Length: 257
Image (tube, rainbow, N blue to C red; front, top):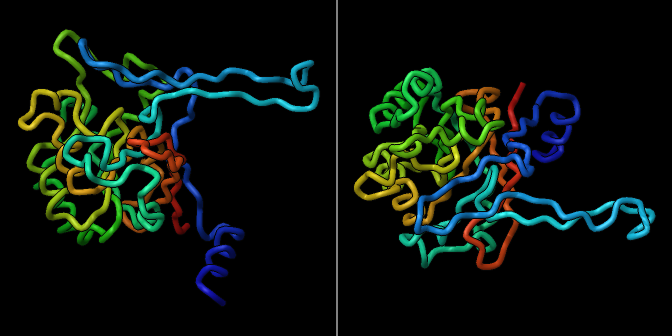
């Protein structure tokens, strides 16, 4: 039996589960808010074309509008100034959209401290226990933040000092970009950087270093709690938008039962 035949058989008989890591996309999906004078993205919206009525008696369909970086979405290198000469989302090689994924779980720490920053030592300690990060794979950071995704205010967790959400340290962002064998980094929060990352040096280091290294980001993931620490295969499916800096994406994981 071929490898692909074995996979389809395993999917059919339940030996491999498909876990949806995508948050539902609607006009209630939380979106990033930047302070003035910066421009902000629009949220997701549907505009009905017809609904089994005189505009189209046998069919229902809609137009939709949304920013590229709304909901569960993919960051292409060109999204950030450090990656401005890199590929747009339509130019990302298809083989980069499927790969092994591992999960580092700091949900307890993030529940206690919403400004928690993942450090190089955290990842090195993880590797001591679980092995090296997968080459051309994904490191997924479980913070537990997807439990807030139904509520814009709770998801952004902002006060007069700004947003307070977990992320990565400057040192870890640089390490993931330049030393780690992974091709991308995924999070449950609104962006790959911490809420306070505008105060870091450099600002927004995960965007700056990873996208500058022609690696990728996945944000607003869901259901990371359903994944094993190692052994999952991630499938990311952004729209191939020409000149797109990113795209809403359906993100799935294959997990051996």
